[in-house]
Amino acid sequence: MFRGSLWRMAIEGENILSTEELITDSRLRIRKLVQSQAGKLYLLSYEINGKVIRNKNSTN
Image (cartoon, rainbow, N blue to C red; front, side):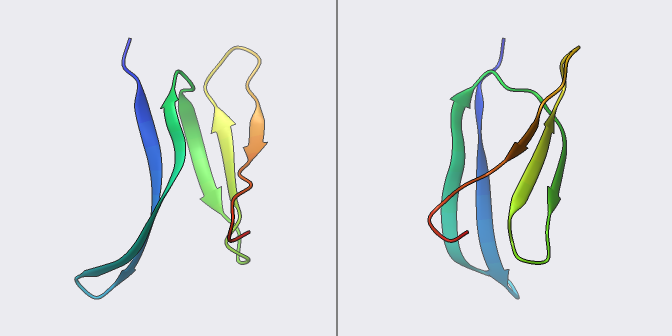
């Protein structure tokens, strides 16, 4: 089974302004990810009983 990370990057033109690691080494399989106008991330997990997860971080 693969493990991975989810990163948020602020990009301007061809430059990466900042990076933030949101999920580290998780077995969570993400089915869909949506960002609200306020910048909050909502994830839908890919499981039989899928979960909706709101990401809480330092900027939101």
